[in-house]
Length: 80
Image 1 (tube, rainbow, N blue to C red):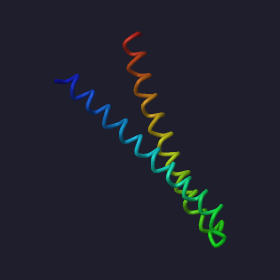
Image 2 (spheres, rainbow, N blue to C red):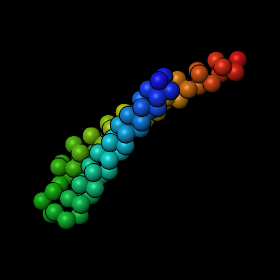
Image 3 (cartoon, rainbow, N blue to C red):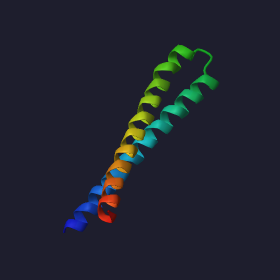
Image 4 (spheres, rainbow, N blue to C red):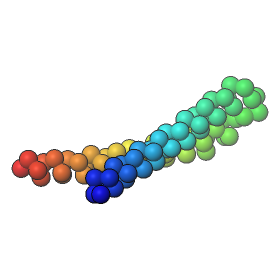
């Protein structure tokens, strides 16, 4: 049961990360499309979306670093 719960938690984590990447991709495509196709879409319109994209990327980096730190502790505690 513990292995099953760990696998489910891992699946939930990976699906959550996938959602972050899908959201980031959507923002990037929207901004790019609007800048190319709409002569009324300005830099001022694009900046808030790009800042949101930067923030989402930062959250993902932080999450990855937390995972690396946690796994590093597990690996070196078991080998040391």
